[in-house]
Image (cartoon, rainbow over all chains, first blue to last red; front, top):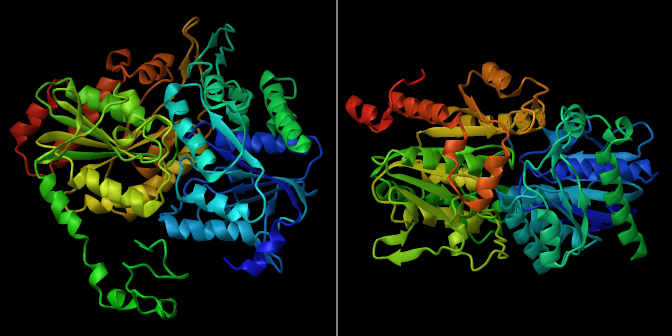
Length: 269
Length: 329
């Protein structure tokens, strides 16, 4: 919007990564949260921008849902999860009076707020800014890509579940990336198998292998699988740091490997 | 309801606003005159045309959820199949998820095309009494992305309601995308003349889903859309080997049951997380027989529709619609 303000807010942000999926409920916000926590774990300064305006999940996943955003000279001050300010968050969730309030907005209003989120947040110095998006290929996606292109946009991590119903929508998202010139950093297959805690039988609740197949089909890198893990969903529900709470779990190492792959990809480039 | 055009000046109050054409932001806008005349505030003429086109549709049901991936399309498809099992019911399923249409695959109709006839677009038929319409039928391939902003999506939804030859129907089920934005406002607005019986809300047990569903409930209240009830999907996973139940998506805040009690909404039922459901979705098969929860949910929905009777049908009609006996009240 105001071009003068545009230069400052992302000037000290090194890398910007979108987290996309054509399908809803596949774990975009969960992956965003866990990758952010994993990055912080390796000592990086991380920010999360949540542009899901109608269904913001990030504040609750990091248990900062009752916080408010403050203004300073440089713009909106993001909400920090900890006193050392290593993880900064901006979401429409912080701007609502009541958490149950519905944001019943058509495209233009959503686009205006996304413009402000890109230009008016005082992120300060960050190694990584992860942008969590709503499902689809519409207003929010076009606006965030248009707005970020003026600054920097390293690429997108695409999340899917293994089912054909999900990979079908995600193929469309990949076409979106190709059309808008967003580089695909890789595909993550989430909810990939569930190990019964009673008998250790692995059930493929949402099928198996769909993410990897999709990666091959579209010529995108495959970053890895994350299993269905009740410990992970509970941590996400309660806003706890899964990476800290269950460092021995297989899910943790899966997330860590994905994060390492992204880091290697970006830092070699 | 704000209705700001995508190329409007900043701070445009919206063409539907009382302030349209009158605020300082309107100065210099080429449409200021039209807006201040009040003409755009008159209801869209399409609403009347849609009312006529849907005059022979008895019940219109929306399937909503604030959250994505909770099973709206799976449930819609299931509900359509379930209702269509009674051959005396004419059922149609409309998919208004423009950017992520899943219905064609779930109904086993991938690659089908829509045909033009004298009376409009013909929907695709799965059974003699089950018609389906989705943007998926208008795309040239599985990689085709619909990269559209709001106004184009709204235009498509308008066409689905106005230009599709729906014919005589007992039930029109509308599957929606997640959120509370363009598609939702449009479908409610366009159907305002024809009338919607109500919405069925789908959620999973976690708070992360319920918090979005509560927003959708607020949306329904704002646009005065009656809520038929809530369905909890992915409610517990029964291991196929040892038959123990695991809460993969734990109801940390009491799940849909508590939310329904708090907000005084009927809980229509729970559907467990069953790998067979996902598999049959992928393969496009009907899976009603798999899920013993389904009949009672469908029964409750039919009971609700009979009780409210918006179109003035007689009591006998409703009994006929209801079909099987032993209804759950």
